[in-house]
Image (tube, rainbow, N blue to C red; front, side, top):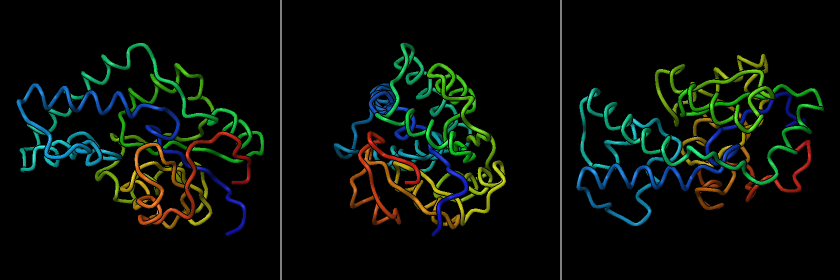
Length: 215
């Protein structure tokens, strides 16, 4: 493909190094429920998914919509408490984002997080104003791996999906972007390089340190 005309970023694990807080928040929820994780890397089931879709996977059984939302909100309370003092950016992402913006390339965020979290977290880091469009959990009917969030982000920046480049750290996120017809670079902050390539990532980076545009 030629140089991309638009760039779309997931937020958690791509722009913000929030994985540790999310893991701790899920563990706090399971502890409250008296549930022991089935496997040491249980939290991987939650990566890239809206909270209400992740809860039944963690518990291993279906839940009513209302109960799934209640538990997802409780997990979010734990996350907000843990993240109260702020989160760092993924290494090198601010400099890379500045390069992309300086080149006149429109940028979007496509995330499973809430709009409240996007505005609060990216605003605190001074990144929010760099994005021309932001698509959040409230804007879609189905979460990743459904491609809706990425298709809406492409529409928001006015770039055809096939001309968009995506940065994603989750397997379901890579799958969503690929289903939208986009090229994906995986960011190995949550999954291994092999897992991300297996999901469809064209290449994988550990972080953005030293990455230059066009990527």
